[in-house]
Length: 445
Image (cartoon, rainbow, N blue to C red; front, top):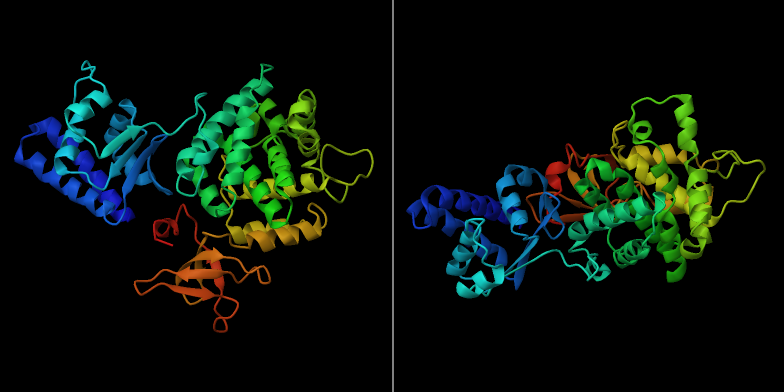
């Protein structure tokens, strides 16, 4: 399906270029238009509708994000954005005449003020609907939109809302906590999706949104892990909400320090102070954020072995929520690309974190976390010992090194439970989604 969509987008873009060069009645234009329409009909075959969206500067369909193609079809992306077409829905009954009229709307001169609704009515376009990504009256994306088929549309909107809310919170202005509530409600609705699928969407973010993408990822992971532990919905929500604020103090710290390739001892002390800064700020809003948010902000860099920071004056028992958020915080941070580090593969993250078992992380909680997550999370592209490539589909908590995988092959899909397969077959390593594994991401699951 992804290949069909890519073909359609290329033909769509070429049709616009041909129309500008030769006019809408030229044979070459009609030829490429026909190819675009036939591609679209194949996409619609067997379905009632198909939705194309523009998120940031990326073309998106469901969970597929066309990063490379979006860079090549900049003109198409810009035209969709210029017309306010963040979301285009094509219905099954679409005719070629309707599609041609729709395409020609993009060529209307800027001074032509005809509205989309009026144009569509004049041209009898009934099987295409246009809109922005669904928002509430206050301009926020509704939490009900957050589903496995619309993650790509909602994720950057949540980051934008968090960015604005944190700017008010740290700037001493009146804070609209609805954006935080919205984020949590949306994450809870999406908590049944694979974490790896959610995390992959962080590639959409701009460099200046790294902090907020990390906050969102940690909160989502904390909610999902809490559910795995059997916590009730109210506690899962409370832990997820607290996770949103765990790095609040970092926003106080200079971007120059956090993004620098090498920092001084003095700068490192400033960075470590973010736990205290965050807790102090949250104390002013304790009635709204709750006690756990303050506790987690203060404790998430403290350790069960009484080390960590801020340096404790005496031994203390850490809150379970703080220890859970701490695990999720480190796991996500190790898996993210930053200016000062590359992203670590899952097997290396596992080894690094297990070195802190019982000291940096509460031992039983860490073991349970990897029973939940696995060494290779769902969605990871892996290289098997027999030189085949596969995708991790689900975990076996009783053997975290032997998940269930689906092998990529031209033959009918082969699904393997690595616990019970032939002796010696195992995962050798993961393949980076930015490198060797990238070409497999578009394969159907």
